[in-house]
Each structure stands twice: as structure tokens, then as C-alpha cells.
Image 1 (cartoon, rainbow, N blue to C red):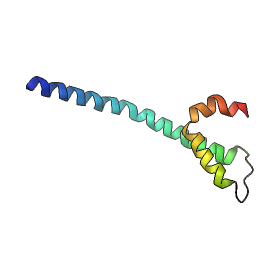
Image 2: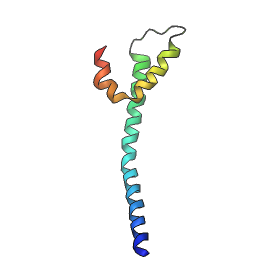
Image 3: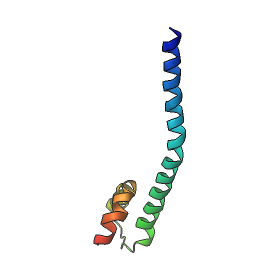
Length: 78
């Protein structure tokens, strides 16, 4: 019984350590996503008018969530 408890403790502790290591990576990914959204929205010289921002801003939000693909491929195509 104590061996089973010990194994469960080790497994839960290893998950906690993995989560602690993943947190800075997630923060960096989120920061890059925000920077990409700001770039696409304000600095990409896209001509906004009265109606197309309803489409362009959600598209920018989507592209900023997949920013590695955007910066590796899509940015250089256009």
C-alpha cells in the first residue's frame, strides 16, 4: 500500500515539475502572440475602413495565435 502511495506521489510531483518548466514557455508564447497581434493590427499598413475591421481584427487574432507559422511562412509570401 505504501509503495502505491509513493508511486502516486512521485507521479503527481513529476507533473508539477513539468508544469513549472512549461510556464515560462507559455508566457513567452503569449507575449509573442500579443506582439504579433499588435504588429498585424497597427504596423502592417493594412487600409482599414468603416467595415473591414470587423473581418481584419479577428483574422489578425487568429494569425497571432499561430504566430510561428505566420512568421515562418505567411509573412514572407505576401
